[in-house]
Length: 376
Image (cartoon, rainbow, N blue to C red; front, side, top):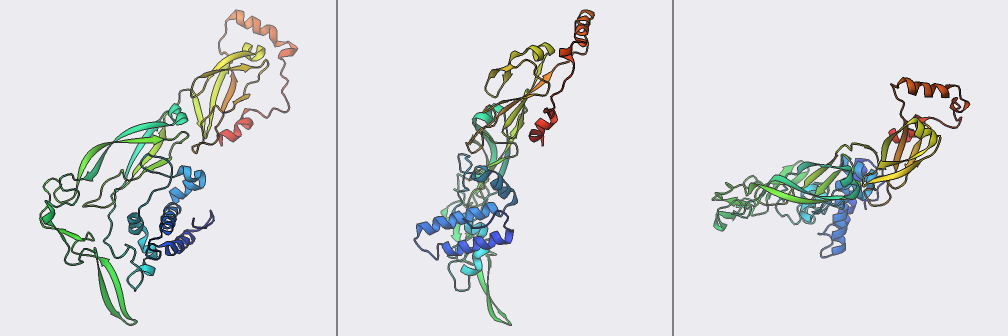
């Protein structure tokens, strides 16, 4: 959307966004829905690429790694026009600001849009939930709009009036004489703090704040294949701002429960299988666990310790739904530490047998070499 390379610097990203923002600004393209959509997409792209953490996730996972909508899907951020002007208006404010341009960073000189703070929660998932995807219900304590005053903070409609200083715009403009002539500056209204309204009588339920603390149960759909440390964004489920505005977001951080038998390595799973010496020599059939159930595999006669058996497609799915990892079965031969005299005599008979004389395969690079790619 911004036309920048992966290795672009912050300044290059900012410059590219400013160019797109000026091109598709709603005040420059009145009534053009396509331009408005492009304007939003450019802002969403900049919101990701200007944030080091989000950019790293996008570089690694693409759109699948980004936070999403109210359902918790990994998709676009769904920014509103108020979000954009509130967050990034300063980037193109000079071009559309108070020097005879188009409406300004707050679109037409409108009042400042407040945004509530974000909430962060951690959700721990089992390997089975990660493999299949799951729905979680999370109980959070948050600030929400006061139901008595509707979030205005005023006792009634008559107690809320337009600010006489800024006339409802939320900001004031001043002309200053300088050596280069008159300079026009715009700042937040000191009387109303940028809200455009003043309260003469406060709401008794929220004491004029417009918000009260509540407990809410939020349902989140978590896709299959997520990993520890991944973050989902549920838009609009964070704290409500004081006296109206845009709610913050709920940031859901993924954590993993340790599986009793399987070790995760990316999308692959590793299982350490222990077999006896007779089973290694003669071969056998054994059951090994997967995230869903147990599967039976064949151990060939003469299987060497450290051999890796790959069960394709028995690992975890990619978070974007394409492809699946494997289950790697690391075969270990169990050597008993204590044996009785009768067992010792049996083993002694094999000592001088040519079949039991070590004859290593010159092509066998060893366990650590074979597993190198999975532990690095």
